[in-house]
Amino acid sequence: MIYHDSMRLAEHLHCYLWQGRGNNCNAILLPGVLRGEQQHVLVDPGHVRNELGEPCFDSLTQAMAKDGFKVEDIGLVIGTHCHPDHIEATELVVQRSEALFALSSQEDAFYGTMGKLFLQALGGKLPGAAPSFYLKEGDLSLGPQDGKVTIEVFLTPGHSPGSISLYLEQDRVLITGDVVFAGSIGRTDFPGGSASLLRQSIDRLSQLDVEYLVPGHCTQAGSVIAGKDKVRRNFYAVKMFS
Image 1 (cartoon, rainbow, N blue to C red):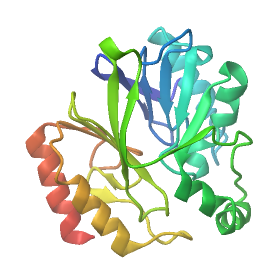
Image 2: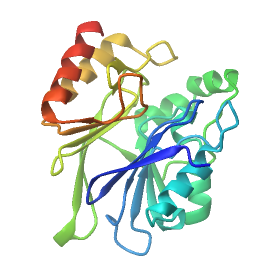
Image 3: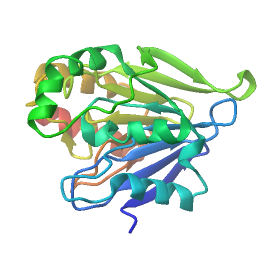
């Protein structure tokens, strides 16, 4: 059974929205943006299996296969942050494709120390794959010069110390991880969370020109927010209550 709904937002951006009963994140695939044989970038591969035993990673690979994409062709995995429901399956991707793995240095430093104790207390763990390199604020250019795709990386702490959000200006797509959702915001009661930093992060993101807001989880209020006015109203609403 496939628990992911596929949604194509742009030529180089496919969303796989989690529809299972248990916890897992939405995954984002940027196909064909890298040089070489392994040309795909995967953002937040999610759980292997969640608390209800749902086969999250198998569901993702099956949904990708229906769109013509294979895990073996992934060359880079990006983690928006280090919670298991976003990056637990990274190790399986790396084993099958030898992909690189990237996240922010702030996130890796926290979850390499006190954050690890928190995850162990919840019965979770970090993937065995270590980061290949660290992402910092600024432009990340992918692919050949004549067809490169540029992702703007924003450090957006609050839900976790080193959370990042990704902005594709050409397509006006904003990938927010667990910073902001449709009608809601990320939790700040986990170790390393900060309500004040989350408010600042949301305020920064709200200044961008966004046509599609892709959150890390779907909520009762919705999933991907499409349309500049709807995105703007969503930011206004969540800032009122954050």
